[in-house]
Structure formats: C-alpha cells, structure tokens
Length: 343
Image 1 (cartoon, rainbow, N blue to C red):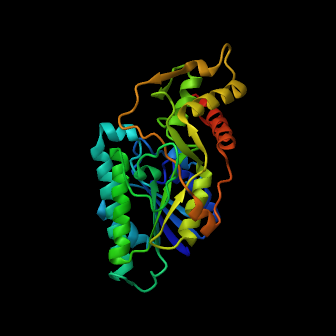
Image 2: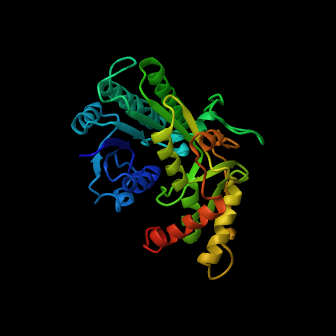
Image 3: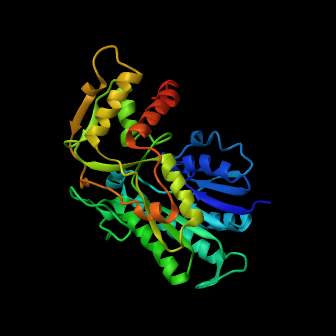
C-alpha cells in the first residue's frame, strides 16, 4: 500500500523526467502516476530508468481530457499533483499560439477543477482524509516580462508577459491562485529560470548549440547575442520542486533561480570552448560556426530571479554554477546523443 499517490503531468518531458528519476527513488513508498501526451517534447526514452520501477505508472493521455483525469483521480485516489505539462517553446507559441492556450490554460484548469472535485466537499472544506493533499504548479520567470540591465524578479513582481507562451503560463498561474483564494485548494506555485541539463529537447538553445556544433552546421544566435538569462541546472530545480512540494506553505509562490546570469553569446562561446577540449575538430574552433540571425519577435532582453525566499525559508541552494553544470551537460550529450548517432 502506497503512503501517497502523486499525479505527475508531463513526466516524459525534460524537467518532469529528471524529477521522476530523482523523486521515485527518494520515495519508494509513494506511487507516481505519470500522465503525458507524448507530443514532440516528451519521449519514453527519457524514462528508461524509471519505467521498470514498481512505484511508477505511465499513462499516455492529455491533461485536457477531463474524463481521463477524473478516472485517474478515482482509480488511484490521487493525494497530490505536480503539474509539469506545458507547451513551452517561445518560437512555437509565436507560430501556433492556440496549442499553448489549450494545453497551458485549459489543461491547468481541468486539473485544478478535478482536484477540487475529489478533495473538497465545498469551498474551504476538505473531504475526510484529504486535508494534507497538495497541488504544485510549475511555472516560469517569463511571466514577469523583461528586465533592464539591473534588478531581479521576486515573488511580488507584477506580471507582464510578452509572448503567447508566457501569457498562457501567466494565465495558468492566475487560475491556480484563484482556486486557492476561492475554494481553498491547497496549491503551490514555483516560477523557475531557464533550465538546462540532460534530456532537454533538441530545439532548445543549449542542445541546439551542441548539436549544430558537432554536426558542422552554423550555430544560430538571435540578434547580437546580448540577451541575458539566469541559468538553472535541472537537478537543482528538481530538488527545489521537491522541497516546495513537501515543505512549502500552501497558497505561496517560490521563485527558483540559479543566480547564473549569462548572455546567449557567452553560452555559445563557452560551449564551443568546452567542445574544443572534449571533442576537438580536425581544424579550427567550433566558435567559427557561430552565426547571428534575425532576432526573435518580442525577444525579452533579460531575466533574472531572486531566489532568496526559497533559500531562506526552505534551505534550498543551487549546487551547480553555470560552468560546472554546463560541463556535465555537454558530456552527457556527447555520451548519450552524439555517440549514439542521434544527432
């Protein structure tokens, strides 16, 4: 008999799969029901080490499918939700925003509403035995908009999303907030900075740089490459999520950031320098392949998170700085992707 039964959404994606690898082993007496639609962003390859575990159950399906979500709650008596599932690529949101509204807004609403139905008798009144249930919503720092050269996003920063992706995530954050204040649903929200690490989808910046470099193609960098992001190693993020889910105060938001601000051009140059050392070309440097391309529409200049709240209240701290984390990441891609001829 499992002590807790957690619904994980989007667990075959980048962050969800890394989280499951960490958390299923930390809690062998909890059941993890992993619901994933297996779109382009999710793959069972990410779960090779998790699928055989007795406390992990994979279910292929859509978070927008209310009947499916209700059946999972009913069958497994779900006591917690950790909601990773989302459309997350900004370029795709510019070309095809409707998919982002459907998954990120309606999908989040479906999960919230089903959790309310199964956990509460009425607003602010829990069903017997469901008092300690929790709904953890994973969000992004992009909801806050763009920073100038100075300043940091905090949990009280006003929302100012600038892309269809960030607008859809901001909308989902507001729905989560509303279900806490209106119904008393025990929610938690974390807003993270840019993640990187093993298993990230190849269309994202860092995997793209690695893949393009090693295949001899041009490495595309938007604009002049001076846009700044705060980078967070995915294993550090997963530890932060676990802390918030177990110890965070319901109704609260916690920002998780790596305190590792780097320009996109620095990212490309540093990865190329690592590859020059780890897998050198026959002639020249990988940096010769860096090419500047037309900037993305509405490209935010800078994101940076103040992680002081989660650090002081829950004792979380990023173990990796960017330089240590990116070396682990590059080595993982060389060993698991490049050498397997999966460019």
